[in-house]
Length: 358
Image (cartoon, rainbow, N blue to C red):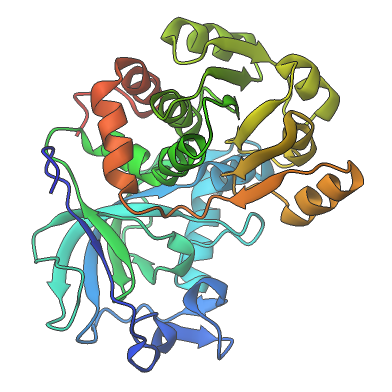
């Protein structure tokens, strides 16, 4: 437990004939894990090692929501209908265009006697595994969602497997804020690990005023970065991030323009962290990174073939890491930054609404 009341739980390593990783929930195609499945079984009856969650709120990942918003011209009704269609057809929230989903908050309704997650009925939890692999059924037609934000009030149920990960929500933070933080909690933890492995590196964060971006900035500084640069796309975000004091230098450029990114960053940095929720940012990140440096891709909009082939074509000797969303202790790391860094909390609440919101 942390002093804020957050308990992380994770499943064991056994496969239990496939049930621990959810193979029995895959309807099609046969032989793949739930994340790769086209359709999952959402039967609310649980196996002994499963947990059923009563859904309260979904958090769509930023890349997925941006794609849906763009594809439907910002029409809330059309966005809502598309999300309902995806969940209804697939038994999970798995955007077929971006390949991403998000996560959810809800209350434990039933925990099987063999579940290793340590959850009890009545626990209010955030799932720290992607909605792309979580069996999910929605029963309210998303009637409470205006379609205008990533956070989606919802009613229904979701299933966690033995090898899922969940966190009991902290009692000292509003639910929308805690959900937003946990949705991107892998970013600061991995950033801190990469930065701490080097001696006072220079770090650049692309998409630095966003949720994962501001956490990555704070984590880099705390882990010993000698210089932290935040890159943003607009004058408004430049002003906001400059006022926060989270970056030593704030620069503005379109992260999809490699030459503009490299020019804005200036001298190549040791570590570049990509937190931009639009495609096409791979080459700029590579150009901004010094030989022998590391690029960490957190965005689900990343094209990993573009990153690999782009680095090869640029003769760039850089290590590229996929931020897979899980680092031991990641939820506690992110929540601690929100609690102890007023600037981080302010940037989050500017997106999630007033701190009083529950």
